[in-house]
Image (cartoon, rainbow, N blue to C red):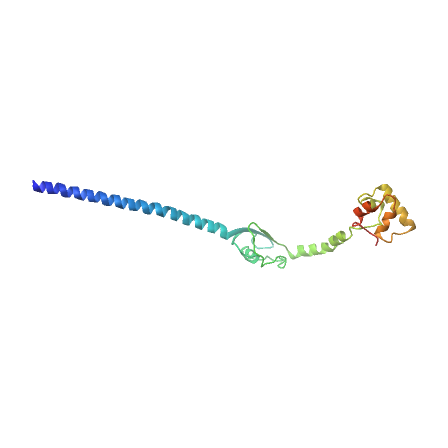
Length: 196
């Protein structure tokens, strides 16, 4: 009888100790799990944001061997992008871009050919001459050219032409000798006219 009671007490103690240890073990497990999940997810999020922030995409086209969009580290220079695109192709104008310039995300780098640059430089003087000759010479301009000036209609253009037949304009201010062209009208055209 005593043996039976001892066995029951012993079994009870073993099972209750086992439950306690399981409960403690389970709590510890749960605590470690809940602590580790946020940490690991934070690590993943941090590494993702670092990855996103550290890289940029740029489009390289023109005279390169493999034109395409390339992913480079932030702070990279154009030379690195050109190298990723397989380097310059034959006939590339290597001096057109500043290879040491830092890249921005979403940038488009175009490497032109030498022929394109030569054609462009041939057309530049003509373009420059157009911009330089935006002044209208009041001593030689046609009626239509004079009428393109602000406030100069057909009648005033005819008056300018009649005036210069007798005496050329010696200064742009002389245009105020024309009837209907006073200081206010002159101020509107003074930056658009010349006498030479």
